[in-house]
Amino acid sequence: MEGNLIYDKKTTHVRSDLTTTDVSISAYPCKSEDGILIGAIFIMQDIGQQNRIKSKMTQLEKLSVLGELLYSAANELNNSLTSVIGYSKLLANIKNDEIPASHLKSTKAH
Image (cartoon, rainbow, N blue to C red; front, side, top):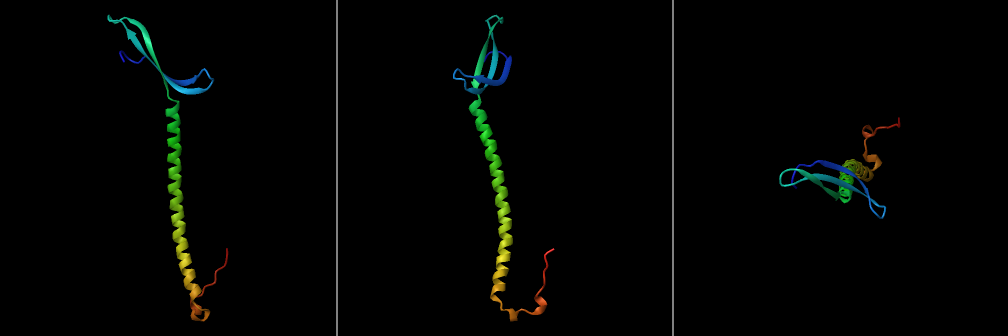
């Protein structure tokens, strides 16, 4: 494009069917061969789809982070449960008379 950008704006455009879309409007000077300004060239780009894709990507990134967090929490919980299940199985296989009284502890809810 010849010349420097003289206008650049992002706005909402209402189409003839009354739907709206985000647009970018840019303007460039149009000069004659001897350098006299004779007009401007305006370019309007539909950036609605681009904005929707950016929004979707942001949403997917947030969901990805949430998924990783949930995976880590589930893994930590699973590690703890594995220990509890293992000790429970050991205790289930021991007969009451095989456990010395000194190994038994009483626990109370606080």
